[in-house]
Image (cartoon, rainbow, N blue to C red; front, side):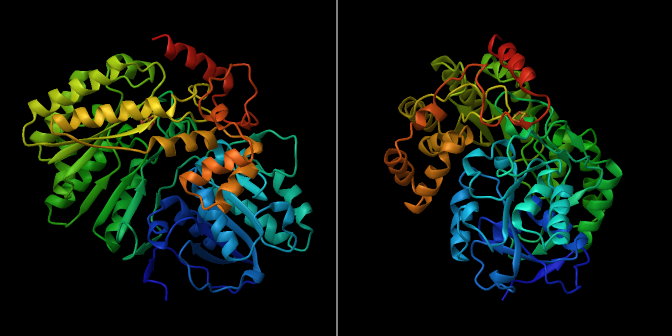
Length: 510
Ligand code: SF4
């Protein structure tokens, strides 16, 4: 039986024999905390008059039989999601390859991974949604429903004419990414006790980030920065508070919202007037931390927060376009501590282009000073390693090799431990495979399938590459020339390649 769900919108109750499955490549509790996925389901359910069913990796019993399903869409947010998506297709006995699927539902995917570069997965999906999916998903479902009597190839041809839809079998097309205006506020449309963030009402305050760090796909894929109008945010907060006292504010850089402080003031005044509110926010921008913001977070039960500093030295922060002085960082920590937060987690990256040992030593010096000036305050660090992402100014840079990154990662962890700071570093080996996929082309289709069939563990990636004789270092480690044609060039995302080249040169010469 499905765990209890509270719908904050009017569910479609009309009977329909056009069944759409929306798939989430993880377990149910994670799907219920994915705002993008839930909102997309709500939009289709409210608008398209179809029979919609949500399917997760741990779904045991489905309401509709697979033979009645006409479309099966997937949210594809992380490079390794393909493993779970393939296992979900296998579970319902759907062939993985699109050209082997006659008489099966249309399989499609949307999300940041495939919006940036769908090529390594192009043989498995009938079509992809490129960019924001709010409207495009609805258009796609309506086209498929209206033309259900046509042959699959005809339906795909119609879909290929829609802006923001990429149909691999209809070739020679530039695909434009779709960007929604965001003049409505997006929030958790279905609350559940069994969500990973139990009964939490998530509100998207802003989409994108105008800071444009040289490596950041979240920023470049979502330009321009769009902020939900203040009045809409307040309306939505009030709506959420009718159902729950847990509010989460979401956005790549919510503190860049021009009314972030006003929203915090509004929540703070509610708490002060006796309303019980638990509030959480995604990571904060160092220059947005002020006493009022911290007081609101603390009053709303938040004990710790995350500050992304990305690099240890001011020089390297300039190279990546993160203009943040050391004094700003110290000041932010002081404000956080003095206004009641118990600790801060700093997030950084290793292996950024031009990084040297001096940059890592600067990181340690910074950590040491933060620790010694803030006794009793909980300081920790999290690191990942640089993964070149399509459509960013750093897309032409290869990664450092795995052995050298592991050496750096061990060095940092050891030295931080010596000064009593705990740290977590993402697996350098997994980051390597992410880089392979992220800059992959259609030649990787056999590789991803083989990797899945071989079990999808680290060893499977390695053995599949060997078996198929694929030089994966070419995708992950090589620097590319600016005039090289890139597999994802056909996806048109402003500001475009010329700008990215100029930005790459500007940053690297800092
Ligand atoms: S500040 Fe954060 S979200 Fe914004 S561009 Fe930089 S890394 Fe991306």
